[in-house]
Length: 319
Ligand SMILES: Cc1cc2nc3c(=O)[nH]c(=O)nc-3n(C[C@H](O)[C@H](O)[C@H](O)COP(=O)(O)OP(=O)(O)OC[C@H]3O[C@@H](n4cnc5c(N)ncnc54)[C@H](O)[C@@H]3O)c2cc1C
Image (cartoon, rainbow, N blue to C red; front, side, top):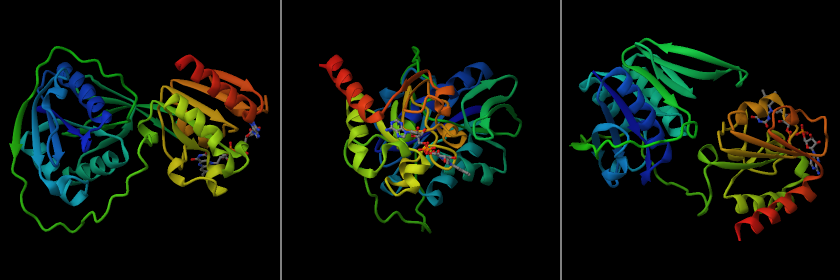
């Protein structure tokens, strides 16, 4: 009996790996089970960064062929390890990669999966809180299959380390296989680009930005705040920005500490992607805009006046 957590990497371990490990550690403690972790990648980065999370053992599958995720290579290794450890609970991250990996592993193990949850707990079994109906309802779930599986949304927990030591590392051989999927090319976002779903701060623009030529106004605020750039579907559908920036029901779900909505009316489908943000700031020239019903701070005014002033003030505070 054990709790197993999947550590996601992209060269380095991703922040969501530490978050999932921390959440899994709390479950392991509550359930009185050891916490194991699995790493799949080219080479496990320094194990000391995994101290303080309650991980007893890290199972490392290290091979150049695992540098990039493919379901072909990853799923059998995670599934096999979960069976070998007789895992009672299996936790992953609800990142783009993690959602696919967890769903595939759950299918292989023929178990239930609570996907994209905001909270995890233990009450004689795995419990989870998950937004449903585009975030309008929070469902409290009990996952009864063994292993009980869940994927944790990035950015929803604050990792607080304890005194637990550097985990033991057990290196497993990676069986030679003839994968049906090969990653031929990876196109990196330009240096400095912050991944929307993992960003601590997000500045988003909607139809109110009036056209693609005006993104620099929001990008300056992004630079000042160290924020990722998001967009409403109206801005994406107008062809002003790539869909990868879309926040909402049919876009990405973000859970930053700060979300600044500029020229966005606050349709329910947009809210579905940003309601978990801790602080929401809205800038809109229509005082009746729906976004003002869900924001913590609202500024009624023209974004082309407000955003440059805000950017300037933030830069002054920083200098
Ligand atoms: C099935 C389905 C899925 C959807 N999925 C998504 C989704 O994932 N994400 C999403 O965003 N939407 C989604 N939508 C669309 C959604 O319903 C809205 O149409 C969309 O969010 C509106 O985008 P917007 O707020 O940018 O535009 P609008 O609703 O047109 O609002 C523009 C706002 O800008 C303000 N404004 C204009 N000029 C200025 C200015 N100079 N300064 C300040 N404010 C200004 C206006 O007052 C207005 O409030 C979905 C819809 C459906 C039916």
